[in-house]
Structures are given as structure tokens and as C-alpha cells.
Image (cartoon, rainbow over all chains, first blue to last red; front, top):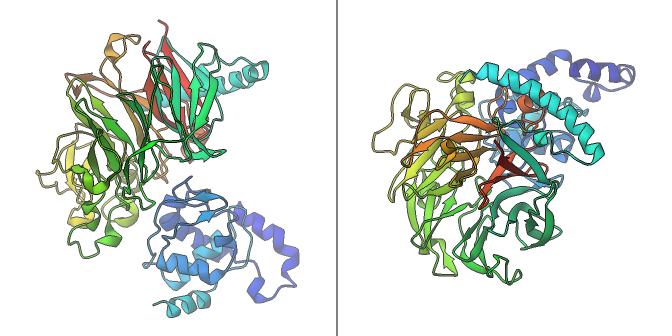
Amino acid sequence: MIIFSVWAGNSKAQAKKSALTRPPSVATLSAGKTVYTNTCLPCHMADGGGVPKMNPPLITTPFVLGDKSKLIGIVLNGFSEDIEINGERYSNIMPPQIQLTDAQVADVLTYVRNSFGNKVSAVTVAEVKAVRAGKK
Amino acid sequence: MNKKLFWAGCGSVIVTAGLLSFKLLTTGTGAADNAGLTLPQGFKAVAIAENIGSARHIAVTPQIDIYVHLARPQNGKGIVVLHDNGGPKADVKTSFGNFGGTGLRINNGYLYASSNSTVYRFKLNANNEVINPDAPEIVVSGLVSKRTHEDKAMAFDNAGNMYVNIGAYSNICSELDPDKKGCPILDSAGAIWKFKTNKVNQKQSDGVKFASGLRNVVGLDWNQQANQLFVMQHGRDLLTVLFPKLYTAKQSAELPSEAMFALKEGDNAGWPYVYYDHQKQKNMMGPEYGGDGVKEADPKYLKPVMGYPGHLAPVGLMFYTGNQFPAKYKNGAFIAFHGSWNRAPEPQEGFFVVFQPFKNGRPDGQWEIFANGFAGTAEQKAAGRAEHRPVGLAQANDGSIYVSDDSKGFIYKISYQK
């Protein structure tokens, strides 16, 4: 359903867009959804809404919609900063998802950035590689 | 218990109650529907307060004032005082305290309330009203608080001691014990600490580590029959995510148990090395520390006195000492289960108050759901998007009990009318 509406909503604009801003493919979103279900869903929940005070939502937050390298960094390095997201604090520590390949990180972040009401550009394998190379 | 039939029955009751409450709210009443809750025959619930904030632990005085601790202050006040006037809505008397938090309890002429790092207390007058709301004493400050499991909840014995939970700031200590040399959290947290109540301005180091290996406890209470501290531990998360070869999603939803412990000084409940399996009724070796879902734990670790399904998040524990409810409730335990988030892809569960029968200071017999329907519809419950979530429990002198809700800020009064 989500995949379909993303496609439908963008189908006209798509022709004018460059490869970088083109809506993600069904295959990418489907692969991303699989990674999401196995890795992210237990904490961030099926609807991406997170858990109040514990696990942050992935819906229209600057962390998901904003700087992609920062977002990739959260997946690769984990996240334990004490920050507020839309006025709420979240207490659980996110462990680094070191088991995910570059392609899986790209797929899942593309899926997250185009699900739950989010609709922003895809994350590419090259972008993930760049962040991973710069890490440590 | 036939759970399936029970849930199915509840579903229809909740739907009906939901429709009723919509009607009744618009006409300004709302008592006839038990405020959306389902209860055993003869019990009645009224929502005597609504939208007062993120209501955590509560206490009620003989004058039927109800102190409510908010997780986060509203208009700068973290404690709300209600008065139950016997009518459908309580009076809001006052509010005070510039800190939010969970723990709140009355003991020996003081109202105790905690932030995530400090336990304060306010002297009470003869009517159990706070004398100086702007100048609490600090009983103990500087308690370990590192975001995860940072709630501090308190209970008191009859010998001048206060017991405070200092939760482990981790799910299972993996990130802090990668080489499995022993979890460093256990030096200062993952334990119940004991402090004297005749001293103020204490530090954590002035207290005693009373019982350790407890991942996180929010519901705790002193059992007068056993003269012993009972606590509800929140079991670890993510068995199937971290060990997909050892645990199915279904197993990971049910395990490990949320566990009730009866504690003695020096006990070690075994976190992070051990978890409890209520289906096998055994302490199991944790998979991070050599376990495989089959190997049992070292018997040196304390065994729970009862286990409950995984992830239901018991955040309130209260032994019922009143005379209003039928005899079977006397000295038994009420447990508020805040509700799960960590059972996906299985439906979320909890969001109810359980009654655990007791005999001679120990659990005796099958637990049962006492008050249900906090979550709303079956869909809301399954998705973990509950309307209300029970947290705090308190008993009035007349034997009625109160239940707080930190989602919509309701306070429910539950009475028995035969």
C-alpha cells in the first residue's frame, strides 16, 4: 500500500527528475522492508511510530528526513546521545547495526525515508560506503 | 485460563463500552460503563480524574487525598494532589514539586517522591498535607541515572529503611561487556539499594546494595505477611533479534518472563547472565553468556517466586490489605502491567492490572487479569498504541483502590459493591 502510493504520487514528476532524486524502485523498497522487519521493527514498531519515552519514531523527524550521512552514521555506529526529538526524550540505546551490508543499509534507509508518511530521496550504496570509510 | 476465549469476550465488551462512553461523555456522566474497563463481577470503576499529565506512582491518605507523581512536570509542577470527594470527579487541590519522576510513597509522616537521580521527602501535617511544598529534604541524591531504566521507585520496611531501584542502564550489557568478563554496570546499578530514612543528604555510597542482578524494577512493595520486599523485574529484550537461531519470534515474545522476586539482603537475581522462563519454571543461562535456550542457569542465582509473560512491563505492585474486596483478594498482589512494545511481530500485550493470589506471604495459585480494557480497541492493543496505560496503584482506608494512567492522565477508582 505504502509502496503503491509513493509510486502513484510521484509518477508525473518522475520524468523530469534526475537519477538521484527519482523515487526508489519497488525492488529497493521491498528489500528495505525486509531489513526493516528483521532489524528495526522490534524497537521502532511496524508503523514506524517508535515507543514513547523509549524508542524514537521514524515519522517526519529531522533525523530521518535530514542529513543522510548523519542518518547512515546512526545505523552504522548506533546512537546513545541524550537528545530530544520533537520535544520528547528517548531512553533506549541503539546498538550499531554492524551486521548489515552497505546495500542493506541503503535499502532500509531508503525504505524508511519513503514509508510512514516520509517521502524523501533514496540512500545509495555509495553514500553508505562513504560514511563507513570515514568511520573510525 | 482459556486465554483465547477470554480475549474474544473482552474485545466485544470493550467495543460496547467504547460506544457507551462516547454517548455518556457527551451527556456529562460516564460512571455506568466502568470508565471503559472490564472488571470481575461486582466491581465498579470510575475515572475520577482525566488529563492530569503523565501519572506514574500514586499514594492515598486516610483523608482521601491522592498524591500523583507526573513523569514530567506540568506547568512546572511534578506532583498533583487530588481529593476524592466521593463523586464522579475528584477535586484538584494543588500541585507542587519542580521535578518529574516515577517513585512516590507515604511513609512515617513524610511524602517521598523521586526524580531519576534523587529521592526527596516532604513533611506532612496531621491531615497528611504537605507542610512546605517548596522545601523538600533530600534523602539521597546522585543515584546512577543513565537514561535507560532510569526510573527510581521506592518501598519501605517497618524498620526505618527505604529500598530504591537503580536500574541497569542497558538491555543486556553486551555493549559494556563485549569480552564477557563480567558486566561493569553491576558495580553501581542493576540492583535494589537500601538507605536509612533517619538520615538526609545521603549519596548512593551511603546506602547498601541490598539485592543485585535485577535489570530493572519499577513495581516494588513491602509484604507485611512475609515482612519482605517483593519486586517485579522487567526481563531482557530482543532474544530473537540477537539470537535468531536460538529463539523464534514467538518464543521471543513470551520470553523471558517478567518475574516476581521475594528478596533477602545479598540475593543475586542473575541479570545479565540469567533469565527466567515461566513456561519451564526455570532460571536459564543467558545466550550472551553461553546459553542456548536449553541450558539452565547456575543455581546460585535467586529464582523468582512467579513468572509472567514477557515484555508486559510491570510498573506497579501493591499488596492488598483492605477489607472491601472479597476475601480472596486479602494480602494478594495487584500488579499494573504497563504493556509491551517488544513482542512484534506478535501482537502487543499487557495494558492491564493483574491479581496474583497469595497465601502466607507467597504467590499461591494462578494469576488473573483483574482490570482490562485500558488499551482501547483490540487493534490499538495489538499495535501497542494504547489509549491508557496503568502504572501506579494505591489503596484507600475503605479498601477501594486507585490506578493511574500515564498515557492520558486518568485516575481510576475501583470499588467492590457486591
